[in-house]
Amino acid sequence: MVKSGPKNAITDVEGIEVGHYTDKENGTGCTVIICRKGAMPGVDVRGSFPGTRETDMLSPIKWDTEIHAVVLSGGSVYGLDAASGVVKYLAEHSTGLRVGRARIPRVPAAVIFDLPMITHKVRPGPDEGYKACEAASDGPVEEGTVGGGTGGTIGKLMGLERAVKGGVGTASVDMGDGVIVGALIVTNPVGGAYDPNTGQVIAGPRGEDGVTMLDSLKLVTSPNFEPPKWMPQSNTTIGVVATNANLTKADVSRMASVAHDGLALAVRPAHLTHDGDTIFSMATGRTDVEVDMTRMCAAVVHVTAQAIVRSVRAATGLGGIPAVSELGKG
Image (cartoon, rainbow, N blue to C red; front, side, top):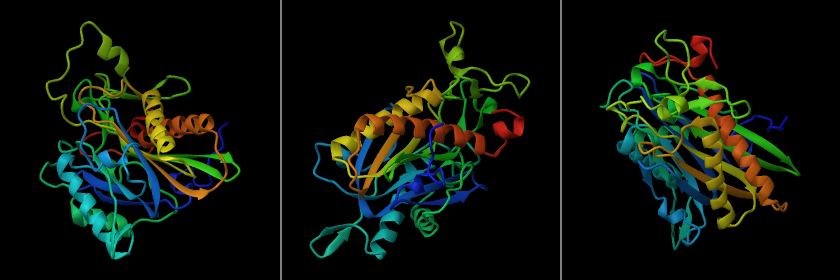
């Protein structure tokens, strides 16, 4: 068995805090992942329909080598406003890149499309981002129908009415010598969820009986499959992978890239035309232990896949969309 950290959460990585703002009444929310002392950043956007903020600066050929938080929000493009509240909070707490006499918080963000869950009229904004920061801690992380995953759904190839709940999940790996790797994922894909070890369907479109889980990959590749007209909406899986290792920006960017392998193990099919799949990466540099990047990449793939599975299994139903746990599945 792969050894997890003590909390089996991204907060096992020294320097990382997580806070949620959850609005179950309106089916949306946001999650903030904070590193107050700064972290080496990376990102990889694989989806064709992304909603993001400040991702260009994370490229390994760009000058920036420090971010202070990542926001994962519901609300589609409107939810990107939640990052402004995080910037305000961090500035008030003297957190950010020193530029002359000022401190500039660097806060990239990504969003999912959850507007059809309950109402499209309420979206996370600056106040909600600020509240997520106030709730942040380095303790255990609440999973399931919370934060940025409140309105998340999964297995939508037969229409939203046949979907099941997605949400927030997290996991970690203890690599030994004090090196920890963690992930936090918000799941809201077109495709279904699969056990990465066995290939067993965990969540997919529900069959006509409302309980049986159908195989999304088989459905979408069937000669008789016709995509629902609404398919450009309601999708995207986003997340963060993090480590306490001291890595170069190129290495951290590699972490974000291989995290998508873990996504594709647990979500099938992934990276579709109407998914905006985006994974950020962070290295807090709290340990100087030399890390073999082959081992690091393997750990990143594992925690990403496990976080996705946990997000689906921890979810609870909302807005008429049931969770696999409530159906006796998963």
